[in-house]
Image (cartoon, rainbow, N blue to C red; front, side, top):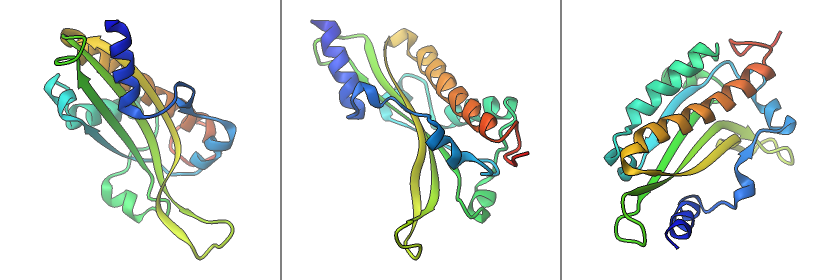
Length: 178
């Protein structure tokens, strides 16, 4: 019963069905082509911060992994000057098992999404300043004492998934295809 309570808690965090865990297809990868890099932002919920994982620690971890994978990183100013407004947004949501059927556990979701400016094809005068063009998510459950390591591992895996998609689409690092 405790396991089912945690699973329900984890699924409730995202509101996504299990099969919606990733959008890394040929169709979505083309939206990464020639992007010219990404600005990285991170947002962690209060329960994640309470477990020792902060916005800043997630952002620094992601930027280090992306730099190692040769994904060009943009400052906020560079992102705002880029016509696509490319932002890699990392969102962590956590829920503590305290007060429900399970105590001492943390359910979490990690979402890594590329936000870009887009234009409607049916009417090119309609532009959206922000749309999600690529994403991946993960749900997990960890003991409170193991939560920081579990969250860091989940973020690392999802950022690596993005880095692979980005570099394969752009023929290596740097964001300028070949």
